[in-house]
Length: 251
Image (cartoon, rainbow, N blue to C red; front, side):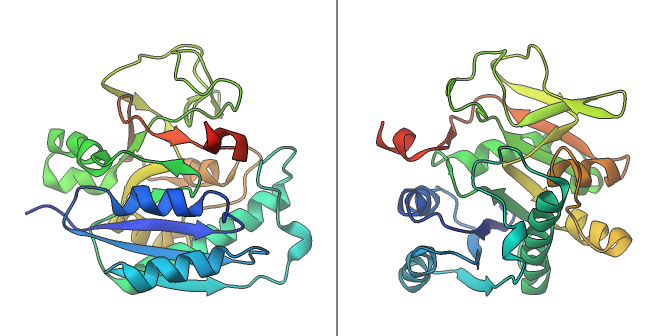
């Protein structure tokens, strides 16, 4: 039987891309799935869009979190972030992860940022790598889909900046060159990835959270603390689109 997949993320001020994002999620061809979203401090009608999705699609959990630390809420483009702003993002993401654990549904979380558009077969593709591991090892494997992190170079070229990194001298760096097809083992992949829910529980039990402030980003805070058994794999063929600006959405 196909494993249960919970799909979702925290969402803030995404009304410009959210309808398209949700439409793509609803079109994913996978029976054993549910959705969870946590709206946070939006100044637009993000919550109304999410609530409409909640009202018309089965298997949707919707929650809200209102922060009073407005001065630390970072901009959407992540330019010039400070550690305290990564701390804010880590806190928001951990609040969402707590909701995931309380829901107690699913074997994997498809954690996907709300500006990423996925193809309909994305879950099947990301699950593929797990067949390479015995069942007792799968709870340590994170499988991600490659996306561009460069608004000027939207295609994956083999040298362009993406969402995966490798560790060099205790720092995480973007590889200078990488393959353009198949699976690629890396030291961290973020933005769109399948995370085993037992791994989330392990991190909360050990450290009280999953994400942590780090000068390179909250994802790296997790990577530095991840158990040594953890393996990251990125699928180079997933055809995900990273919609970083409103202009990109119109293309």
